[in-house]
Image (cartoon, rainbow, N blue to C red; front, side, top):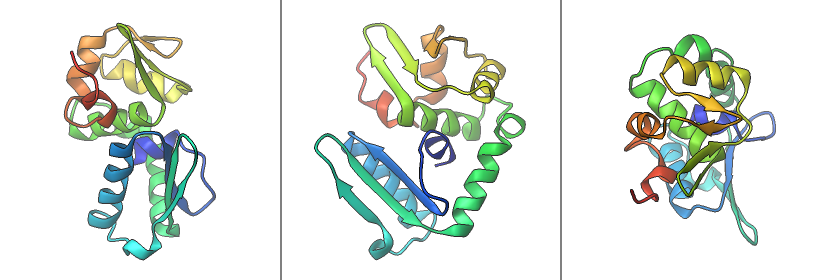
Length: 149
């Protein structure tokens, strides 16, 4: 969830996503309900022409996620489940898959640093070692699960 939130612009206590992927919306709601124990009546859904905006308000969770994002270069230093989940969230929120090209828009300096520490090389948001990147986030990324190799 922190990876998704790092690329989402929300109000202070809002936790949400804006996506065109129905699967990502479902995953977000699943995490909100099961992991964060958010009452389903508190989850707000707005459907646009080409997107769905899903969010909920919770000051304590928002504060924790912001703290994780701020400390991300210190937290996500090893190629483990936590780091893979964080990077998968970033990719789901801001990534694109083209013909033999994987790209993440809006990578911050911190994001690039984390990716480098995890053995993922980028140039202008383009992933240079796609196989290693896919291996890292496989099974955690909704966007990658839609991609057929």
